[in-house]
Image 1 (cartoon, rainbow, N blue to C red):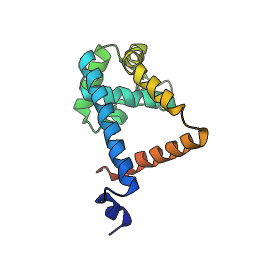
Image 2: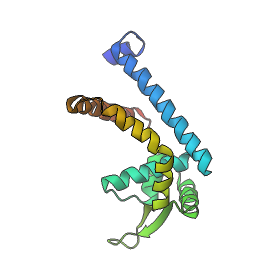
Image 3: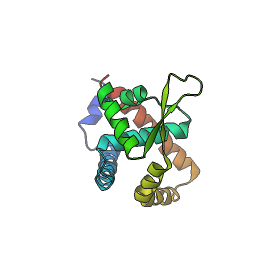
Length: 159
């Protein structure tokens, strides 16, 4: 049995405090996302799609409908319906790739960004204010930890 398997059942282990705290943060963000979706008449998958597209845009990574579907684990028909819905609402548009006109890219419209900031801006401000209480070294440690958690959860997900 691996050491991590021993830790998983031991709530006294310091790492388990972090696991439970991450779960609580995840639940809170999930609830916020659900409230945003309900307020805007979106499906929770629509919100996850917008988040993925915004993250990709920030990273300079183009996203096709196929890649979005893979990322969200939605089949082709579901992805088409999702993109159609977001496009109808003016949140996303399809754009031809200038390098390969056969390829369609998804672009988040300013309206989506504005809606997101109007709802999530206050919590983002609170998180930034909380981070201001940590020095650069502590923030680097938190960043490394959260990156490792993200990587590990991605590996743990069934293929």
